[in-house]
Image (tube, rainbow, N blue to C red; front, side, top):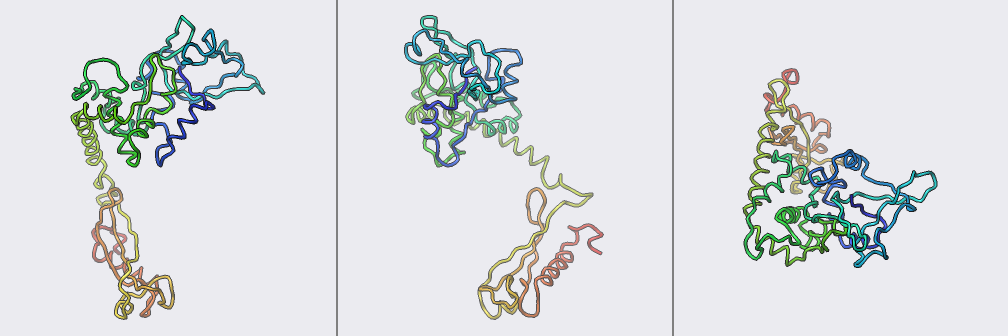
Length: 340
């Protein structure tokens, strides 16, 4: 397992660069789903997913490299013979970032992660919702497997990006539209760039992102769109207003609102105003009573009348008049006992 050390100054520097509106959050789960692990079959990954944080005594942390941090400093620390934690021990609290097989460099002992950050980047809750709508776990990865790349991306060599990462990058652009390409990419990859991968990795630049979007083309994203829209259509068909019923009547709600009208003697006489007993409000107001569907908020009916004060009326009387009018004009929307 690869962990993020919360006090790493490098991480603090990266996090500060992501502090634009709506983007200061990781878009991959704290513990990636089993599909992204590709490692142990024991219960440890499940425990990590439940706990979310790992505690290791500082005294048990060690560098596996024989000299310093190794040739290029790209190694993870290891927990050497983790002893039992006791009260008062100095403990470092670690957040899981990714689960990947270890690669041990026998020349100097460095411990690195096999694989590629693109295999672990996810859109978090947004991707979980996409999977539910499309009825297909890992729908983005499934679409990416059949993607045909064009343009300037050629061959099968592993690069800074992958078709799946390009799809997620494009989707994420719609969730944080005020961010530029670099900010979107940094948000998508998050702390994954801090992991000492087997091959050195840098966040793809805006130019690289543009090249991959062009190479990916519209087909993969159109497939994702069509699957998502089909899922939305299915939900609407199964959960529209016809599914929210009481007996043979649709469940709805009634709510009132005030609408300002031009200040003229005729309007004050006809509608009055609300909020002042002496009708000294700056504007006369029309009171509206709207009857809406419980689930879709579609309007079943609207009745209007005076707001209240003025012309010998008060607020309570104005509201009762509108309710009586709604029961009379839209009696079929109400239960029989309310019509009596």
